Structures are given as C-alpha cells and as structure tokens.
Image (cartoon, rainbow over all chains, first blue to last red; front, top):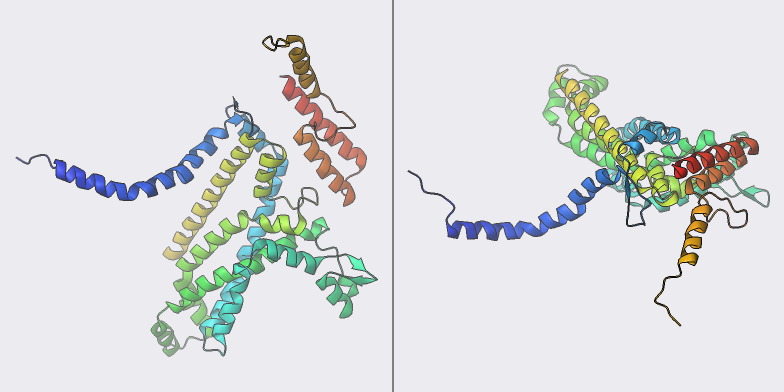
Length: 305
Length: 76
C-alpha cells in the first residue's frame, strides 16, 4: 500500500515553488482577471463612474445597445476599415514580402524602410497625414501636401476636402491605417516565405511549373497558416482602430467617422455611462471572438482543401 | 453659535433645487448642467449642420427627442 505523498518536506517544497509564481499570479489576477469579470459586472449596472452607488439594471444596457443605431453604424465603419486592411494592406504586404524574398539589390534596406511606419506613433502618423490631406488654403495656395501637389501637377479638378467630406474621410482613415500597419504583415509574411523549403520550388520547376503556378501551387498553400495569423491580427487591429481617427478627424464629422472604441470612449468619458460603455465592450469583445473563430474555421477548411 | 443642529430647511431646499435642475435647461449655464446625451446629440447635430447633412430644424427635433426621452427615464 502506498503512503500519502503529501509529506511535510514535499509540502514545503511545493510552497516554495508556488511562492515563485505568486507575484505573476497576483499581477495577472489584479490586472487581467479582475477587470475582465468587473466589466461583465458593470455592464449590468447603471453607473456614472463617480458616485459610490450603482443601480442594477439587468440586461437593459444590452437591450438599449441592440437598438443603438450609432453603435452598429460604428461597427460598420470598423468593418469597412477592416475590409480595406484585409485587401489593400495585406495584398501590399504580401507583394512586398514576395519581392524582398527574391535576390534583389538593397533588400535589407527595403526591409527596414517598410517597417518604419509601424514603429511610428499613431498620433504622429495621424497628424502627419492630417497635414498631407488638409484642404485649407493660405494666400491662394493649398497648405495640404496632396491638394498642393494635385494643383501643381495640373490636376486641380481632383482637389478635395479629403477629411472634411463624409464620403472620403473614412476611406482616408482606412488607407492611412493600412499604410501604417502593412509593415507587420510584411515582416510576418516574409518570415513565412523564408521557411518554405527551396527544394519544393526546384521540384516544381523540374515539373515545368511557371512563376504563376509556383505562386498558386507552392507558395500560397504553404503560407496558409502564416496568412491566417496575419489575417486575425489585421482584423483585431483594424476593428480596434481609434487613435488614428481621433488624431485625423477628432470627434468631428457627425457620426461618419465613429468606430466602436470611440463610441465606448464617448460613453465612458463624454456621457458618463460606465455601465453602458462596459456593455459595449462586452458586445464588441464577443463580435471579435466570433470573427476570429470564423477565420480559424475558414482556415481549417482551406487547409483540408 | 450652535453648529450642532442640521439646517434642515436649507438642505431640503438644496435637494429640491438639485432635483429640479435635472429637469431644467438653463439658457445661460448650458451645457454644463445639461444631460450628457443631450449635449452629445447637440454637438454632433452642429457638426451635421456644418457638413450640410441636416438642417437646424432636424437637429433641434432630434435633440428635443433625446431630451424628452432622458427626462422620461429620469422621472421613472
């Protein structure tokens, strides 16, 4: 018969081991687990964020959220930015990664240059692009670089109020977001391309495959797992964009440039509705999880195919 | 001077005044005492007027709608 393994020296040893991970557990609990559950708890309350008392309202915040047109409009705007990022940004990142994967001159220089925009602060990028797209004039000349350049190159009919027009403002933000973010995708896709065994290309060439067939039958199938990671990170990053929005157009332009995070910010600090803001956060988190799961499922289907 | 006794009348008056202010739009101290949702609708409405999306009348109607909704909610 076996004796109990929980002897005093072993217990002491376990306690000593546990004391090493205790700080990490405490930090994780205080800064991750507690806020996570607190957001759920607050979403069932009406609270202005200041008073010590809060009133329990059950699912009323969620019911109100379902009929909040501005919230769903902001979700649509985030989806639009995500769509531009998934297509334009990732296509650009993949094309540049393919180019840098080949034996070209100065490829290290290009790698550094393409990774500069992600390193820059979003506020800095936002203000720089705000100046580039600015539509104001001084002494009969455009101050904004794009409109100035369009005028000087004989294309004055293309001069536009890029950030003041509801039809173009969101697209401008989406393009700037893609410009800023493509470097991450570029680095990850380039790393993925470099892991593909060169013998596969040689074997395909021996079989008579041209460049297009190499891309579609070797490169893309081998890159599916990396592409999935890039796509999920792009979706999560683009849905949560807000610094660029605030730095490029501020709180202006009605509700045309509202994204979910600016709505949450507005509910929390503008209208002092903490409970409602938490309900927004919970709803937004669920949507992001659903989107990520959908992409994972799609990727598994693609791998099987 | 006796500070021990609570000035009941004043505190009741202050409380009533504070409650009344929740249902009042004062033209000279607006928007500091206005409901934040009404203020937001008003601000966004002005932006919509500037970009030519809405007329001032449309914005006024929307602000009125929000104000009435919030008053109704506060009275419940």
